[in-house]
Image (cartoon, rainbow, N blue to C red; front, side, top):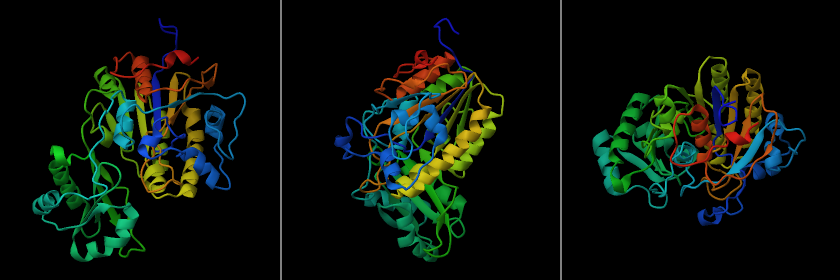
Length: 399
């Protein structure tokens, strides 16, 4: 025990199940999301759902869903967190977890597409004509324009309800290196205040016809740098390991990261986490599992989402034996993306925080948190690495 009379941990594993919302937040109506419930509506839409590892930790004592009842004698501490920032996107959610508040939404071009001046500059500087320039899902835009792209070499540029400029191109004909070059140019162009999107995303694909197009794992996000210091900076500057798995390194543009791994899928991300748990390090392993959001939430596929949750729970079962008494596991989400909701946007929801270590002597449901930043404050407090701008530690609840 420390002088504060609560336990500290040598390693913390924070896993973001990207978009796994736990029901409407108090301000959901302001975002058009009153009634959204990612976890609940997925469970209601499928014939079965088995999530024994998270069930035992107490996740479904916190949130009652179909198929997975509450249990007695849980092994973890669970709570719901509200987002304080004015958004429901990936960057804002992750940045707030690590101590930053984003009071203003990132600019979006959902309704209008990008301005002609932006497109003209992008065409001039890349040397490629642009097609698309509208809000669309990644699969829909490939079905509509992928074959034309293969014939003409024109770049497919599109956006979504998020603050993103996405460029889709064939790895086989356009080339991955050329796509990344064009995305670098797009990032530079969109640093202008009136065009400043949160992320430029390279969306490579393979295939010859609309029936065979498949997006590859070589996606690359070019995000804005965080607006201030985060918990990750505190940890790195204090000499701790900060291991990023999945798109964490992209979201934070490498700020505060000591090592990173690209994941081919959410299952691969969990495999990398399991491998990392078998290593000797001291600090944070920060993981994002994007398939829940990109493959199932945005595509409004509750069945696929449910199966992905089961795969995650299976991998979680494999991870648990590698956790030591001085390890802390934290499972959370960055926003919702209810696959039964209208449109294809994220949903403003509460998110879970599920905490587990083999050395817990207690368990239960904790008070609802009014900011995601409590997660980061807990990490900072654990390592005595700094005092984040926002958030309150939860360590004293964990016994």
